[in-house]
Length: 468
Image (cartoon, rainbow, N blue to C red; front, side):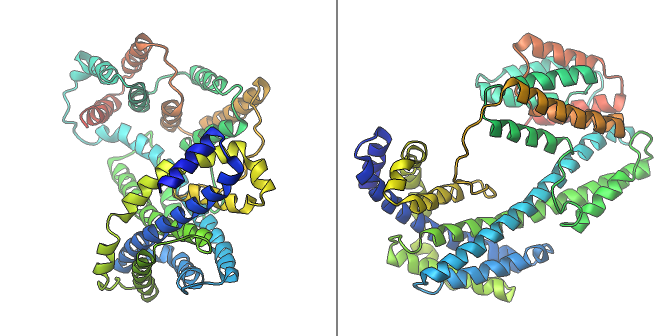
């Protein structure tokens, strides 16, 4: 272990690069293989427990779970699977993973839309019910408490997070011209940045503004499509109390559905990522035989449970005890030794190619992503040539988004437009230069709001945030 740390340090310093590339790949491959087995055992068992409880959402992942089981039997649970079986399993698990990413993309798009409906319903809530906050507080002390909340922390990252929260909850009273001016200023920050960064920024803004509609949006989750249609059927400008209650109920049920389905998709995807890691390393990794045996016992028990649609048998507590603490130990080691992969990726790929190790390192790059903790990350190991975003590109992309938003604003009621504007502004890089500008923004936003229900909602929501 110390040796792998030394190899990583030498690669980072550019020492003995060619000899260290081979040694580093072998050591890191084994480390990924070991952690892959342990995490697969733990995460697959957890998935099998939830899957066996039959919470009503299992049918949505049934076909994917069955495919994962077949992949595991083919590529991992045969003792010493052939390279042909492993390669076949890798092809299948890659396809499975892409399908799960697409499904989660749809779930995320629904969640973003429901957030806007929540924004709208929150701001008309107190037309129909009492608020336990003194209305005088809005004029007497509210503004000062908001500023104190923002400025009470010295960490800029935390301060910026708080500013985003405040902007997202304050009454939205900006003119469209001022809103688009702020949007354009945010785009100028990306001048000279990588084009991919700009595209990610645009994707995020389109997502929070209900503009992004992924493939299968209307077909992947019929219950959620029905919920959207029901929520769209109401008028939110002259809503009766009965209609409000129906809309709130529909939103609550849809939100619970999204959370529950997302949870089981994440559990399944974590097991898929772990299995993918094992498959990428299985033919070359040196894994402790005792740990591997215990992991395979747990994996077999979980696989049987998934196939039988039952809770897993409680027969392998000895195996759980045997691998207790191994995950934490390996994760700590990995975090201290995988950093040199960036040096290889950025500086040594020509030497990797010369040594005939391109495929080996491409697998390591994939395993790095699979173990990153971002369950649905795309496995893009090839870095595209960096292209900088010039002023013309930035202006064109900003204009395109502005046109989309302008059309959206024409087609939706003011309360939805305000929700979208609030969502976008809270997601932008901080556009205030100092505390005085923040104070002025807060003062104007609060002062221009004459809607009593919205004033109460703003107080209630901000107090909940500030008292967390």
